[in-house]
Image 1 (cartoon, helix red, strand yellow):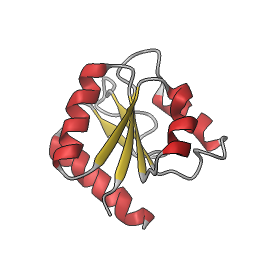
Image 2 (cartoon, one colour):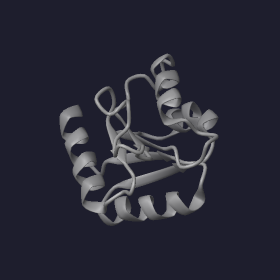
Image 3 (spheres, one colour):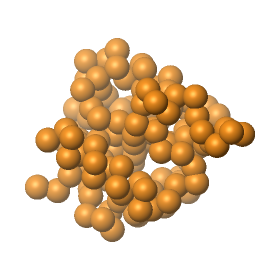
Length: 121
């Protein structure tokens, strides 16, 4: 069975690029521009992984992830946070979460997705 990924991003350009990479690798991708719709999306579609892209200031990936952990519908899903790097070349939360830093390199994204999906089986 094909793995299914939900991609949360408020920006359509980033969603198109990331979803194209994932679809070319054989994944089914559901796009979600409004994080408030995530619980409904997850109730209507099977999902193996959630990717949160915090490309815009109105979406803080870490805060959304922590909120998801409090919700029974979303708490059990493996999640990747895509975030910008700080001046020192990292993020302060890299060791706590599955974080992929920008710029997103296709092989790193696909490797992280494969690794997390293998761990969750």
